[in-house]
Length: 319
Figure 1: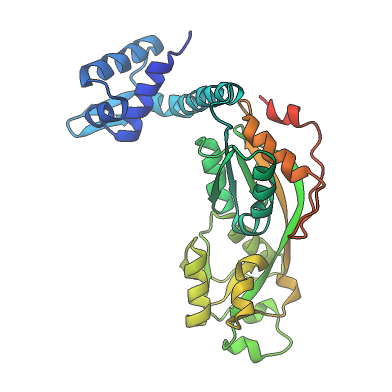
Figure 2: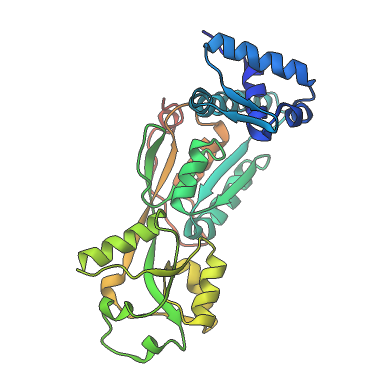
């Protein structure tokens, strides 16, 4: 059985727009034509993909099962066209990379500068997010590479290389926080103060809970949960909250004299970074060029070194 790209395009348009009517605008097709296309796909698969309602269409269990494969096939088709256009000189490709805040701020800018110097026709799309969000972005084909700490490998995501870039998590507080004037601090002293943290499903939060558990302590309840670095820093600076963050994200505030890390060695965590991709499909040539740039031994203004990436062709063709 072969899936027709036009059928998959109609399927995805209905999913993204929620109804046949709104999908017509995205595909520039009539509603009856889209309806027939979806129906042929359902007949071919022998399963109803949508529940039809007067207000729109919702995916059935079968439609949910098809969705990630439809996205993958559609993305791979777009990548194939991009590759051909690049070879014909009509474009140079798009690098779609996601990274956690430290890597997005400290590692990628210099790498992108070198990348565009070597291949000036490339376009680069950078998504900054926490580890778990990057994993979702990979699965949904929103990015081709993710640079992060530990993301669990799954049937969909695989780790391809470790990078020498590292950052260090510490407990931080505003300069006027009561704990800043105390000596001999331990993790136990942190339990009686309000915290602002990422949600519990976020990798940094899970790592924090694990450290507290290893110290024989219950992790403090976060009074505020947010993924926004700006909100976290605002609460730490102005409202005497405690936070646990990597040094690159609070360095500017420390330099400005607004926050300082608390001297608690047992709460220091050095994070190693890895690069991830989807298990299925071919890595676009533009993404391979970024990998090549990250692995190059060229001098860097940021002082960050890269580990050599072996056999980039093989990395690009994992199935």
